[in-house]
Amino acid sequence: MTSDVLMEYKGYTARIHYSEEDGCYVGKIVGIQDIVVFDGETLEEIRKTFEEDVESYSQCCAEAGREPNKPAPEILIPVSSSLYAQLSKKAEYDGVPVHTLMETALQKFVAQHA
Image 1 (cartoon, rainbow, N blue to C red):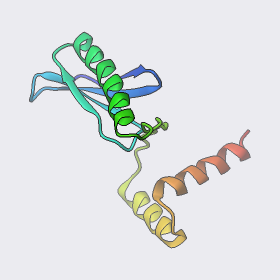
Image 2: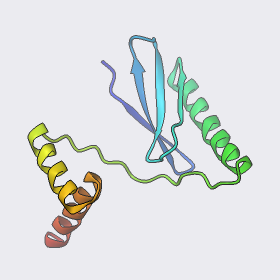
Image 3: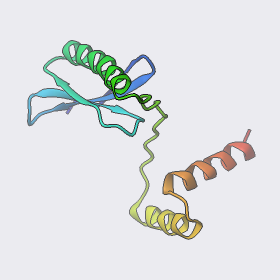
């Protein structure tokens, strides 16, 4: 089993995963709202495809007259389903998305422990 690999190019980060089923690497730019996915048979090939897709994405956005999404950091935090349910209820009660609730909690934690 191959672990995911992260690649960076021009401020964009891609998560690369080897698909046993397809026999190739599959990548996705993370931290943006638009969906940009790509694949390649080797790590070298998928790096080249990733870089080409970043350039193509920027060009397509320019042609459409809009700014490309700016990458935002993505942190994956595994939590139990019961904790996630509690977070979801609290976020719903507060009228905010779960990620906003978690960001606020992390900011408070850092401020208390700085």
